[in-house]
Amino acid sequence: MFEIIRRDGLARIGKFTTRAGVLETPALLPVVNPKIFTVTPRELHEEFGFEALITNSYIIRSSEDLRKRAQSEGLRTLLDFPGIVMTDSGTFQSHMYGEVEVTNEEIIEFQKSIGSDIGTVLDIFTEPFWTKSETAASIDVTLERTEYAASVKDEMMIAGVVQGSVYPDLREMCARRMRSMDIDVHPIGGVVPLMEQYRYEELVDVIISSKKGLSPDRPVHLFGAGHPMILSLAVLLGCDMFDSASYAKFARDDRIMFIDGTYRLEDMLSLDCKCPACIGHTLETLKALSKDERTRTIARHNLYEITKELALIRRYILEGRLWELAEQRCRAHPELLGALRKLGEHGEFLERHEPLSRDGAMFYTGTETRNRPVFRRYRERLKERYIPFTRKAALFPEAGRPYGRHYAEDFRRVRSSGFTPVVLSPFGPVPAELDEIYPLAQSLFPGITDAETDACVKDAVSLIREKGYEEIIDMNSVTDGNEIFDPLLERALAVARYQFGAEAAAAMFSGRMEFVTSRNTGKIRNVISNGEHILSMRAGDGLFSLRIEGAERMIASVPGEHMRVVVSDDAIPFVSEGRNVFCAFVKECDPEIRPMEEVLAVNGNGKLLAVGRAMLVRDEMLSFKKGIAVKVRDGVGKV
Image (cartoon, rainbow, N blue to C red; front, side):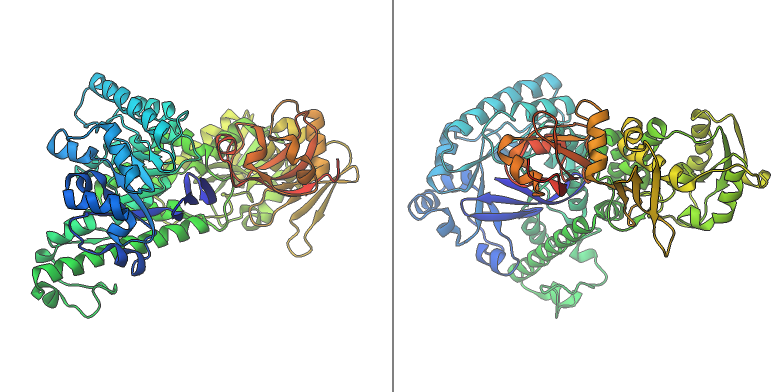
């Protein structure tokens, strides 16, 4: 069973429960050759903290001695490893050396007989140079073998491998057809040649197309990926598990892994690493070691590089900053930078999983930052949900954030003359009423702009024209006027439309409106309508928290599934009293809900039970059997 503990877009920290223990993801499984222990499995567990490893059942089966010991003692004893053991099936051997002398049925039964915790199907490795018809035919064989393995797995978990070469539609089809099978983890296979040839742009397509088809309640394993320089990008795209033999293979060739690449010992001019394996060594002393000792030392260094990067990735997920780490890492190699730019072609899919807001500021690290889903979301919601309060716009240049603080007097002057202040920002046009919402106020850009940012600012004018303004002039051309306006009402209504949609906002903003503001900042804290507290504005992101009274108005006026999560009857008493909504009790959900969005928990008849924030999207809520779907803030009380 898999459970999401924390997420950052598609990236997730999870708990994968197996019969041998719980694996926290994202996790790397070191590949252990059962014949050669460059670093022993016991050391992998005790010194490096690896909770799981992967070894090859085909190699074990092909050795009479290893086969007998594995079947009599068990795989864990054979390896002297107390954690989770996953086994490969021989597919990679068939890719490297031709056909293997074993059937899918035989290798599945063998993996069961030696006590593998996670066994792997003998799938067909799809080569990048295969034709589409060849690839499609091989997928049919892989699916047939996977279905058989899932039906006979017993207590062993099964890894169902997604194949499809470089054809995104075949990858998604293969993944989607596996959704109905009793599979526990999904490796994405056939990708080693892409990584070896630095074809990272195609790798992005392969991962995302696979993710589109897979059931989200199963961890995704990227086969053969273990270099620290690619891990943050792969995790960003939703990969949970990895495996690598390169830590040992590279070491045997005197190749040392670093976050910015792999370097041959003979070409290095200095050794500036302070990991436990390198402490006490200079470049000269490392070169002077015997071959075996040097291989072991370099392998241990490579493992420390991997574990250090995984720990950093987990921290960035917890802080909601993984995009920044991935952008930094992808600048280590031009082909990785190309992969980062490739994300722009998958904006729609990425946006579905992007949280509505995050803690902390968004840092602009370069032009590739524009591929982040927050840029796409803001522009789309501005087009679809923003309604100007006047028909005239006064344009302001980019300045300190929030703009309303920097331009306080200028905004008042312009508004008093019947103009809407609009800042030409790196995000596009920002009407004054929206200047405090995430990520507009919670972002940092360099003072010296790049060409792409300048182009976006210029393009903002055309977006303003699309909103139907009848007059657009420069801010300095506007003089003081005497038009009466209510800045608090305009801000609150504009944010509500942006966040909930125009129809929902109209339902809540009816009758006599009052606003409770902060004594220190003057910012809106609570929104009152006809004496009812309907919304509270969060100081951190400038967005609203929904109150029960506001939700009741939305229920009464906005029909259908809008922002609703339907709860099963068993959970109604608990949710209505303010308990969280767990995935196991979600019956249906609005497909447009994004993570961290305000939602209404309702019963099967649409009656309001509670309000809170969504932790997952619809597909995730309906797939997971464990974990929180909605973090409830307030319940309506006993029903």
